[in-house]
Image 1 (cartoon, protein in one colour):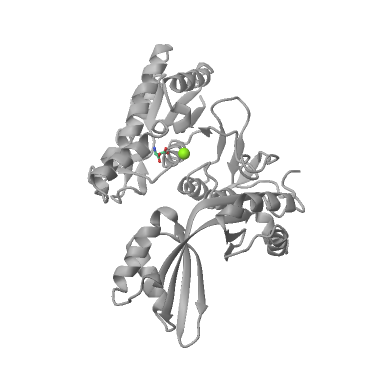
Image 2: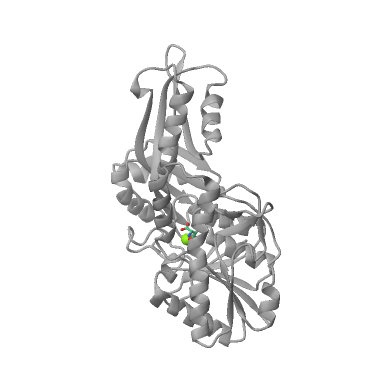
Length: 404
Ligand code: ASP
Ligand code: MG
């Protein structure tokens, strides 16, 4: 009998009506004689609400307590969905991350999965039950509740599908799949039928909100194919897997936009070995992920370093740097600017030259000024003014013929 893992995100289980809809969908699959494991997120908004309350009480809440708090959101959903399935006459049982044997390290709020035993899931499935597992959470070797970072229910689904050798894994969400660009910005954006892990990973980490990038990374590492599709209709979604057909002449697969970025600039640093190391060690100690980096060599033995971080980390980054250079006076030696990061992604760039020229030409024609640039083998990103972001996405989508 085939085993499927279905993951429903927060908007799909937002309220009692939505949970009933999910229960119906799960029943349809179960009625076909398929074994079903359902992974769910917290109802949309719940995790944010919990975090908000914590921060009202303490601006820097302890991360162990945060994990206990945040894991509550998913526990509400598993119990409710189980009850909804019972009401439809479907035998179902819910499991927390710990009960599902999802063992992690003890890095609170972004724990890494060590192993998944599955607990008694296989037995429950053999008895004909639907098993509902709380996403986003596990248990550390020391018995502490841990979570996997925002959006971490995706990781639970992918990892369970891998560990229990599921025949398929569906990530059900509020969009029909992965698009060539955000359809809210580009009206003729197209749904991508198949995409490989590499491109999906670059898109996910470049601002495509569809999936947690850690989950895609995990899927790639362990070769776990999955499908991203809507929980609100029956249309086929986007299949994410190892190899997709290479289409001749296609250089770019998608355009991504991340509006949630801040550029920090540190001025007049001594232009000598070790300066960059000093700055980026401060960020590493504060657990801050840095994206683009530019260093300008100034005159007179000084240099400026600019780098981008997620906007949520910007104040912490600035504070860390100010503390470290506490002898520096003047307010403006560290400054913040809000930016948007625009990326084009495609494995076609490996075999075809000219992607950067095309991208920058098109941005020049649209009168978009480029503030910073970074590249990988299959991605080119540019930092731009947030106000120009939508136009820039549309220009690039056209330039690379993604609407065809
Ligand atoms: N509830 C968690 C979050 O909002 C995990 C998830 O939804 O995947 O980040
Ligand atoms: Mg999500």
